Image (cartoon, rainbow, N blue to C red; front, side, top):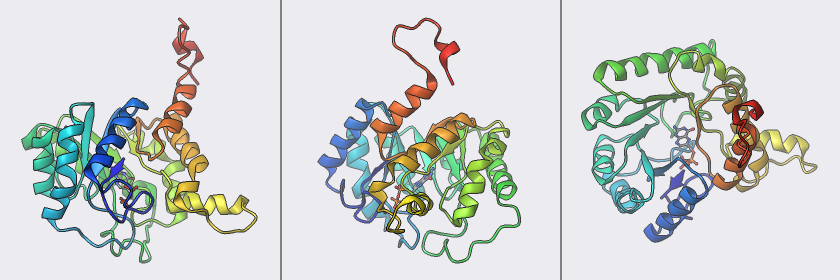
Length: 265
Ligand code: HH2
């Protein structure tokens, strides 16, 4: 992920300058990212919406330049931003509102449907579920099927870790990510540096305090690897280099080894 924002929960302000963002994007491709996901609006809990012109100003110049280096997706909830991002070279719409499938269909690009309860400003105010895994699965499958009917060929589903969910909801969704995989739609999971990982890390920290987002690498990698071994097909991460190394190990791709499949975990 590449957050061209002043306020993202972990890397806010780091890539607000378009040149710095572009350079980081190129670096992520070099480190092994299959897709660089460019976002201009933070969706962290409590975040305020960003006006459409401001979001366009942040993401379009970065997408235009990065699309020459590899596959780019746009992380947006706004139709206008999605359309202009596609015109600038993005081929995947990462949609945390799970509502833009008609745009993806019209533009002939892929679409990610993510589950969220409410909206970022209020989503952590007492989220409740009767049965979180089935409710999230049913919501996503309904949206994904609507997208297929509208003509979107590439449809991903994503449980939306941290979006209107308490720590135990996140853990249930991760534990049972196979239930989403069984739907037949490819699954994307984003756990990177999220607060439930900080809480789990604090258990083993003598201070008992959750570490800041930038110190949550181990849990981020552990949960990414877990999701992939349970059948997820893509993980959305900050720490590309370290995650790619971990994934290469579990994929068992030893250079020059002819029995690649035999060695994979
Ligand atoms: N998480 C974030 C943003 N977009 N998209 C998908 N599909 N899945 C996710 O889990 C997901 C997402 C939040 O993370 P980040 O982009 O680091 O933070 P912020 O929203 O503060 O920019």
